[in-house]
Amino acid sequence: MELAISDPYQIVSVTQDAELKRIGEKILRKERISFDEGVYLFKHGSLPWLGTLANWVREEKHGDRTYFNRNFHIEPTNVCVFSCKFCSYSRLYAHKEEGWELSIDQMLDIVKSYDGKPVTEVHIVGGVHPKMNLEFFLTLLKAIKAHRPELHIKAFTPVELDYMFRKAKVSVEEGMRLAHEAGLDSLPGGGAEIFHPEIRTQICEDKVDADGWLLIHKTAHQLGMHSNATMLYGHIEKYWHRIDHMNRLRTLQDETGGFNTFIPLKFRNKDNEMSYVPESSVVEDMKMYAVARLYMDNFPHIKAYWPMLGRQNAQLTLSFGVNDIDGTIDDTTKIYSMAGSEEQSPSMNTAQLVTLIKQVKRQPIERDTLYNEVRDYTNIDVQEIEANPLLN
Image (cartoon, rainbow, N blue to C red; front, side, top):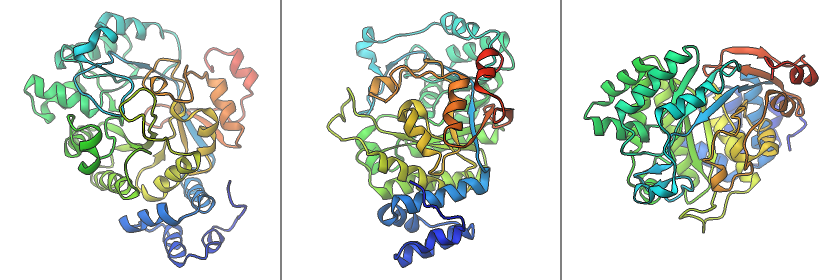
């Protein structure tokens, strides 16, 4: 679906739309595009044109390098006090018999099950359970760090943290400091959904708002921590809502520089209160990734979360501005499989991830959470990876 054009300035010239040409030329000069220009790209840019331009930006930043990491997830509970209409994962606290609640020992046992395996990250997110308070999670963080100090803990969305801090009657600054000192290394990007209140009040009215979400990430950055950012797209929002969301993130990134990656997350409509909303097409998905790469000029990385998109569509995104496809995950997450994602058992070993990346002629690079290179797999045969537990 790419245009076979080697000269980047020919990319913009294939359209007869004078405004698209002007915007494309700005991008090629590496100038920032405006809010209105971002909306215009969504409305008027053809997928091949956007994809080719986004791919040029991606290759200017990263060449063919495509990142993944070796990670696993812990989901402490799917019991939640909130009732987001798009969520197929959580069970309201009033119906908690339908959910699960893991103890600290049970979660530590999950961590111990990876002893001797070359994972670099544990990703901890889940529902907001009133009994799982700040003290509970500080104890968990300390226990994980005591057992495996080098394991990077990426944990808790601002939705979870906001509830913990309010319940503990501590400020965001104090709460984040306590979590960081206990072992929290970075924040995932979840809970952002769509920032604009016109949409947020319709799909997730009762949880932390955009300002609260951004404040928690800003505070993490001020403490020297990095974080990711997401956006839930493809439901009732309009294009300008997407640009508004990305613009708020871009503005904070200008201030702090603390975001590693932006992750567009596709809305899935199985078994939730928004099942009547049709899911976006693959064409619309690829357009979302392409525009994200063009608009989010100060975000080093754009990630496609393969368990949500499916393996083949995740491969496709690598031609539309994406340079990261997340990690091995090891079938340790249910958030998207319960919502009807393409991957009902989301797990890939290193050999499978490397193969997926090489099939589209990209260079597979294992990274840690902060994008330090762990290993370049470009010249390592899949058979060698499969035969070596340290590589696979």
